Image (cartoon, rainbow, N blue to C red; front, side):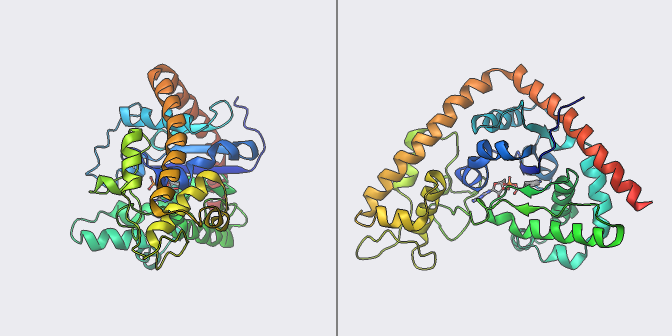
Amino acid sequence: MFNVKKRDVMFTGIQPTGLLTLGNYCGTMCNWKTIQKTYQCFFCIADLHALTSRNNNYIKNSFSTTILDMVALYLSCGVNPNDSTIFVQSDVYTHSQLYWILSNFVYFGELSRMTQFKKKLSINKTRINLSLFCYPVLMAADILLYQTNCVSVGLDQKQHIELVQKIARRFNSIYGDIFIIPDILDFSRQCKIMALQEPTKKMSKSDNNINNTIFLLDSLDTIRFKLLHSLTDSDPLSRIKYDIFNKPGISNLLLILSFLTKKNISVLEDEFKNYRYFDFKEQLSDIVCDRILKIQKLYFKFRKDEDYLIDILRFGSKKSLIYSQKNFFNILQALK
Ligand code: TYM
């Protein structure tokens, strides 16, 4: 019925918990256009994961404003819906079913060691729900359900993906080669974009200080302001050098530039070796604004046509359901 070509599978997802950031873009989205040429791609809108933090104004409606904003941004970053699949996680019931099965193959100790969970626990000790604890198991279900060969995620998700691999191996060791062991795509493996004012912590959608985060839908003036005022290190002489321990601010800006230009950090260090911080930041702002302007132009075009966005989701959900049901059936058979 659906023409799913026999190619290796790439799976990725983003939570619809607010506006997407430059961290999301560098960590995964900036490569989406290219990876579609090689892989059969599934781009998930992970709304069930978003339920784990109930303070997010998550709306249980597949066609909510936030979800449609995300679809328009996915398209603006180059996802071709005729070739790849965009879908909402909660529209495809097999994800939650496999989640329950896989939760039998992961231990309490393993989930307790997840750094993202530990961080959330340290902030709020009393109101931690079970779903936050089990978050990586649902990720495992998302990924393993599609016989995924690789995932596109930033460095912050590395530990979760390693756990997914462990769960798959454990299952396979009992039931035979049921799951493919997924790997992280090389390009994003090392990507962790840090907060602009506090470059020792991750850039995040939910940061209280908006100057820490560049949103893909920020105005260009705002983006320029945030970058020009980003915290840099107080060396007596400006040195554009990658050194995350002694120069986290400049290192973070170099990392952003490296992901946007696809140039190695060492090449950039050389290119900017005679620049003052301010001039470097100006150049970086030009490059970031140029890229984001292209995304925004496409975004506003796609976002106007809601029927088109809804059609993409309807088609994507059907396709993901059919594709995943086949794999899910094989998993159930193995358990019998
Ligand atoms: P989320 O929404 O937290 O992040 C989505 C993607 O953006 C990347 N990312 C970053 N990369 C670099 N620097 C940053 N500052 C930064 N902030 C975010 C994340 O690494 C991620 O790739 N739990 C997943 C969503 C998900 C998923 C999946 C991903 C659900 N199921 C299955 C892959 C496969 C998450 O991190 O969402």
